[in-house]
Amino acid sequence: MLNRFMQSRLRGLVFLALILVIIPAFLSNSFQYGMVTQIAILAATVVGLNLLVGFAGQISLGHAGFFGLGAYFTGIATGTYGWPSVPALLVGAIMVGIIAWVVGRPILRLKGHYLSMATLAVGFIIAIILNNERALTGGPDGMPVPAFEVFGWELSSFARYSLFGLEIEGFEAWYIFASVILLVAVWFALNLIESPIGRALRSVHGSEVAASVVGVNTAKYKSLVFVISAIYASLMGSLYAHFLGFITPAVASFEFSILFITMVVLGGMGSTFGVILGAAVLTLLPQVLADFQELETVMFGLILMLTMIFMPKGLLPTLTAIVSKRMRKKAGGEA
Image (cartoon, rainbow, N blue to C red; front, side):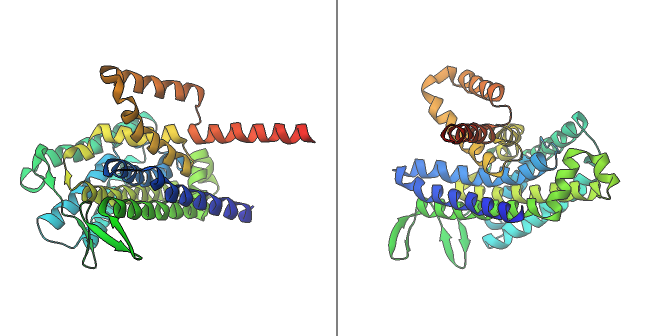
């Protein structure tokens, strides 16, 4: 069984890598590269959120708060205090992880609607702080963020680089970097899922009472996955800030939190590759519907509603089940 999982995990990673390699063949300008880079960053964020929601069964409606904290910590550390980008990103993730642990210990004792309201309140508190601390964050007007820099090499969308003898634009370099980050995020999540921690999380999702009876420390594992998902969000928030070059408190807003949770539900809770599909669909759909003008929001909601009615398990699990069913029928017919 483990060998079968290892093979499927490797196939999934290879398939995702091939898709990321092929995508540039269909891109022709910086805007399109910017969109797919944004998808990669947001997808990595919801891969972490899926560990909490899809595998541990714990809801979070304020996850954009951690995303925003990571973005603003990096922006303030690099822009105001002159920190190098990588230490700012890592220290920000550690700080957010500590905050998530302190906050998560009490609120994860709650269940159902009470847990939803508690995580929602955390997100609101963070957004309010970012809005009101004008001296540090610039308030509602936001703040600029320097380009990402590592070992003296600056990653900017407006620069040109030489990579293995090839001249590439800055927006192409950002896409390559974000794609590698996404692959690492997925690799870590898949390994975590099959580890003893992952098995404990699935038991908590199935039944906390049953998990406790067999010796699983449910409070410990819920807090742990909450911290891990918050660190995912912080790291990706930092990269998102560097990528955009400018951030506002909107990155920590309730709307962003709802976007994250919708990506997980739409793609398929408990499906690591499914949530990536969910992130891609929800990022691209507004662009596709832009021609509908004032009906854009109505069409967007209608599509989501119909998708969840006819695909309640999410896009990828449903599509995978349909393909598997047809292959079994075909194999049975040939036999």
